[in-house]
Length: 339
Image (cartoon, rainbow, N blue to C red; front, side, top):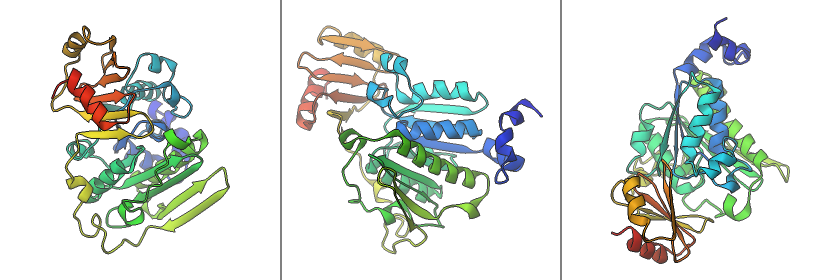
């Protein structure tokens, strides 16, 4: 037995995968959007399983509050202010050097999603907001790519595998107003529900990639592990009026992007700068005018005299931390960054 087959020997023994399925996995490509709690657990499973290419995209960096449930990060990542995608890539490559791991520190939006989704076999949801999920849903159904949706908050989880031409889509099951507004930042989350939902997402993804499509769970699964509840809803029947999978209008994909967005529960406003940012140049520019500035290879953190913080990314995104007032954030942005 060669070294690679020895690595996957227990997986190959499983009747649902065997050597033929393992070979299919090695040739497969998966996109994971969001490298928080769900994303890290998903990536851990898929990289260890031997998926040929795993592409990671996340806009955020590692913070201390992440460590309770985001399994790929540690205290040194927090100290180094590492972007989640980059920190995850380092850990994943140590787990399985035969898997190609790509990492992008970026905010997924309608302007760049098609670039990330290129040549991908399955898109797996690791996000924390429905705006991005609906965007992924639109892109997947436009291109005919399965979308493994998952969401967690508190002790509850929701997951389903949406397959273009076979099932309804996320928009059919959860309308634009379907979110309760609760997030992990406002009501908390326990890590076991993260592991369960991520495992269900990965199981459906493995079924699809290994050719076991007849084994797919064609239901939206709802779980509450604290209150001992579980429920499934069939996803086989789409709504005739659905603008995504039936009308093929893809409203979220065609929507123009707002330059400003809130990061819920974080006292943070994200503002998209018009052009990429040279971190070396911005470090030099900000140093004389702010209280403190620190630069890493991936971002700049500036403590302002006004009390708020700015976090600058090379792709042009700026986080204004310490306020939820968009006008206040725009004012600080204009003062220190410009138009």
